[in-house]
Structures are given as structure tokens and as C-alpha cells.
Image (cartoon, rainbow, N blue to C red; front, side, top):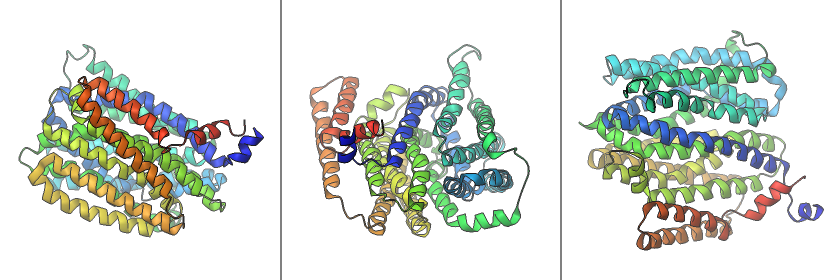
Length: 492
């Protein structure tokens, strides 16, 4: 074992990152695909493209300004508690009270915008419930920011899948039994989300309670103003990111005469894309406090950045090629009604997923290092690019135009963040790693092309492609198996 340590110097924080990432991924792999493919997709099949498309647009609208519930509180809390755990008892109730007041501001802004966009009666009521759900989600994320800052990753992992687990049970009873006589309405889906989020929030508060102390109303104006001023750059970053990530569904529904149907087509592929983003987000959840602590201690972070790049960006490229190539089969396997427009949209979205992976590595490092001014320049540039491209492409290419816009925007932002990190931290270009990524991509595309010619069964082709891609990740050195084995054996 001493030889292993001498030949493979393993950083304690890297080992901890890898082990807890494995736990989070395991929990989420067990639950979220079942929810996305078994429940959410089935809801769309039951209620139809147009009705689900309207729900999709309203859901995106509820996301646009949810940063107003936070204004950087979660980020401030995560970094602050990660650096000084003793502050949690002093700050928890103050920050929770501040978020409760901000929730009222968020609800007002979103509902007024909903009225301005012309939503009335049933649609406006649904928007109101979705707004309430977003408030609960934000409070859950606040509780989770404390859990990850304290490195209570097991508890955080449980909370990360609890809401979806409950929805699988609740919705499964209505969708796959005869309790409702085969009927299902989209508003029921929204109400069931409310119940699942409420249970998750209560559970998260109970988990953090022993460390945070008794929750009570304790709004501190001076303290809150200090946080808002210091967190404003981060809040602006999230706001711009939320707009250019979510505005496409709203613009599809509002710019086109058959917008509900077009948004429904877009939602079919977006569901898979969003699921991939959820898994990528798990890296950021762990990386932010890890990067923060390493930077505070003046530790070298290049090894951690390379490790996370190889794992997340490597799997991101793999997933992007795999799902883009087999987009038609995947959508038709899961949905009753699939248009070519949905297939093309899904392919473009999955190619853009590589940009999301870059953001969750390099954007997270920039956040931990407080390079928020530069992050905001990149994000607002992406926002302008996104809106302009949507206005040009949606009227011509409908859902596919929105997907192309998302792809271009995400890759643009990710590449800009990568360039900044390399220059700012003076890493230098790792040409070997770049070559390994390029080699993997080229060979994997060729493999998929050959499989398309010689394998007629789409399911077998998909399985063979996935297996070949995993082997190629290791064979090309894109993901280094010796490094992972060394992490697993270190300090044993």
C-alpha cells in the first residue's frame, strides 16, 4: 500500500469527493430515471401533447425568477458553513426567515408576469400552485446547502431523491391502478408534486435540526442586506442562467399559433436532457464546498479539476453522442406520439449537454473562487445570444430551432468558462487530455455509424453502442481507470 501511495499521490479531498459522488449517483440512478421515464413521460402520454405543452410552459415560467427566493443565500451559506461549521446555529434561522420574505417577492413577480402573458383561470391557478412548489424546492435546497457544507453527503443524498421517490409512489397509484377509472389530469400531477415537496422539506429540516438549532422567525435586516449585497453577482448569474435555460418553452408556446403542441414536442426530448443535467448537477453540489475548502487552505486544485473534467465531461460527451445518435428510437420507445421535430430537437439538446458539463465544473470553480463578475459577463452574453437566436429560429424551425439555440448557448458559455479557468489558474493546456477526448469522440461516432449499418435491431444497437462507449472511455484514457482504482484503495 505504501508503494501505491508513493506512485499515486492521492489527495484526501479528491478521495472524499469521489466516494460521496458515487453515493449520490447510485441513489439518483436508482430513482430519477424511473420517475422521468416511468412517471413524467407517462403523464405526457395520458394528457396529450397540447395540455402537457401548456404545463411545460407554465413550469418554465415558474423557474424564471426563482432566484428571487434565494438571491445568493444558498451559495453564501454553503461556502460560509463549509469554511466555519460553527456558524450554522447562528445563521440558519436568520437565513430561513430572509428566504420566506423573498418568497413573497418571487410569487408577486411571477404571477404578475403570468397575467401579463395572458394566462387566465385554470392556467393561472396552475401557475400559482407551481409557484408555491418552487418556494418549497428552494427551501429544500437551502437545507441541502447546510448538509453538503457540513459534508453530510449521505443525508443530502437521501433528500436529493426523496421527492421523486414519493412522486413515483403517488403518481404510480393514479397512473397504473384503477383508482381513478383510468382518468388523469395534469393538475393532479401538480398537486402531487406539492405533497411530495412538503414531505421532503419537513424531512430535510428535521435532519439539519440538531446542528442548526430550533427554527424560529429571526429576520435580521442588516445581516440580510449584507448577504444580498455580497451575493448580488451570484444572484444575477443564476437569473440570467434561468432565463436562457427556461425561456425556450415559454417562447415556443407564445410565439407559435400551435404553441402548446410545439412545446409538447420539445418537452419530449427536453425530459431526457434535463435528466442528464440533474446527474451533472450532483457534481456541482459536491464540488462547490470541496473547491471552497481547498481554495481556503491554499491547496493545489489542478488535480481535482482534471479528475472532475475526465469523469463528468467524459461521460457528458459519451451521453451526448449516444443519445443524439439514437434519439428517434428512444423517443418512439417511450412516447405514443412522436414527431420528427421532437427527434431533431432531442439530438441538438444532447449535443448541448457537453456545455452543461463544462459549466458544472469550471463555472463551479469560478463561483468558489468568487470570479462572479466574469461569470456574469459570460452568462449575460449567453442570455442575449439565446433570446436573439430563439426569435430568429423558433418561427422558422419551431421546437428544433429552440433546441439549436439551447445547444449553441450552452456550448458557448461552457467554452468561455473553460478558457477563463485555464488562464486564471495558469493551468496551461492539457493537450494529452484534449487529444484523448477528441480520439474518443471520433472513434465513438464511427462505431455508431457502423452499428447503424450492420445491426438492424435498434435496442441491440443502443446497448452495443453504450457498451462500446464505456470501453472506449477507458481504452482511450479519457477516464483513467488506474486513477479511480487508486482512489478506491487509498488510505485503506
